[in-house]
Length: 71
Image (cartoon, rainbow, N blue to C red; front, top):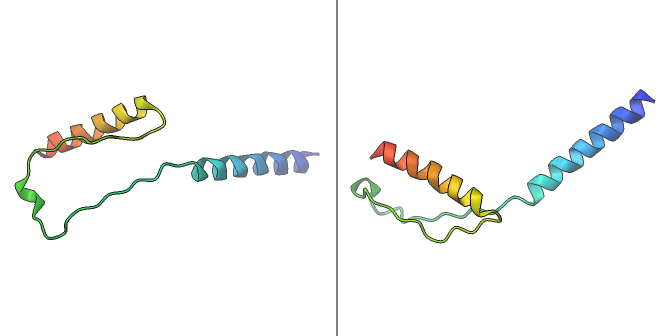
């Protein structure tokens, strides 16, 4: 009985992990490798597409904080 319960729990956990990775957002980035970005000290945000607007605010805030710390 304990083995069946363990197997069922393991299977449910594995399926939950697979489902969460299958629904992850796609992140794309591109840059010109011939430009020296050390000369730029400003940035602006484009349109951020996420399923939850609260997540966008958290992400933008965290990235902005890191960029401000670097000057």
